[in-house]
Length: 74
Image: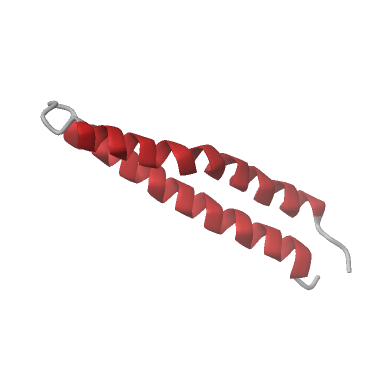
């Protein structure tokens, strides 16, 4: 069984994009909740939520690409 290296590299790229977002999203959300009286509260909170959703999406796509490269029939 051969592994498709290009698809595997793309999956690892997605996971490497997800890694900083996994830490950045909760930090931004925590920062927004600490500063609820600030006028940019909703903008910062929205950015944190988008970072968390982006991390989940990149994790899903990365794991799916890696599984396809390992187990997909050609």
